[in-house]
Length: 327
Length: 306
Image (spheres, rainbow over the protein chains, first blue to last red):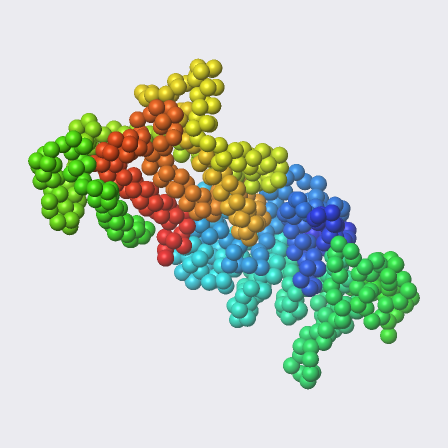
């Protein structure tokens, strides 16, 4: 299997009232064909900005992709014309959002919204597009699909709306599905159903998935590989089993340490001391160094590159610079 | 949808009843005896007594009201005191004219207002946005008689494109319609801009873009339909006011509309005319409001299915 998406040194900045917010400060990762790749991190670390940058949907002003390369099936998305980019959106790369309650247009019927996308990208006529919409709704296990297709979003529950979103976004068989916190706004039981559905559909359609979440449980459940983001940069990237077994970056260790566990008795949850930095005035060097218990000389001067630990396991931390080891 | 329209229409009845009560009491609220007023200053007592009988003013109020209503529903609004013509005939002529003028005005207002508002919202703080919002401020602040005279000066006197007043052809209507529509277009433009700015921030607009839809479709189909509710509200109000007669515009362009009929009626103490036009104007306003409510349901499925 080949590489589907390759992002190199992506920098997306926001310019607001004289300040520059470095939302993405040199992000690099790749996604293989048929793989589920997780992007995890706290709120505001740049996960969603990464997703919107891939689709080139960063609102300008105030945001702008100022540097980098997004290679998708061999083409650099950042150098495409707007109409070429438009034909990729919804057809080759689709996206489902965090808020199923507000992500569907309230004044159009479910079927019409789906058919609009299907007719646009697959060049089907109305009746064929209607059949396709119906088929997709059945595929995501919506009971009574032929009734739902004629309904408006407000007549459906959150879980149902997210199913509709998934059906709509997969209706053109995209190569890549970006799922930005697809279950965060849902009840726990519905969450499990939606995750199972995404997994099932992925298997059927062989779609690669970029799964964005702050929920480590979802990562463990769904992903093949995972990247951890902190303050606009990737700090660690590895196979899911490896990172759960042995998180290396001090931030990853902190994050993993903060997972409450039922098999251990603890008085309080473990927290990482300090605050997420202000991205308009980020710390010099490694952005995590003010909060890091292991910081030493080079940490506050130069941003650490991603050091390879083992094949596929990369860590952006001087502790793992060649010849050194953190024990 | 049918039930919604029926429900709204039924709510019209009490309002119309109230309107008829107010317009009926008009004759009885003016100081003095209506019969004396109707007869004029130098009439003799016998004539006044005869009038009182003729108009049923010697009957108890509720019977008079009943008479009034039963005549009104049959289209009988009485006889104008000044020119001895049935009020209904005057109203018909004048209202038909007002209707034409209002339609043309609201058409102009909508066309300019919607387009300017949408473009302003998609290019917020651009040169176009700033200029159209300054223009809107002008449109709202300009006194209509001044703007009307200005239009007349430029387009009738100097350029000789349009007649300066009177009625007859569509050409006669264009300048008054622009004068009357200018303020409304400004209000509609501002409301459209505000409403669109709110809508384009919504998640479903991002979804539409992420699905690869053209920006034109995103804005004019997905966003505008959602932004329509507050715009329709303003639209309905403006249209209602226009149908109520544009006294100033009609005066400047010497047009025979309902507004002037009413004002002349007031000046000449022609109470049947005032009564009739009041009832007509109020009814029109209420009906326009009903149509606005129905339009809400067209744009918002939540209202349709509630």
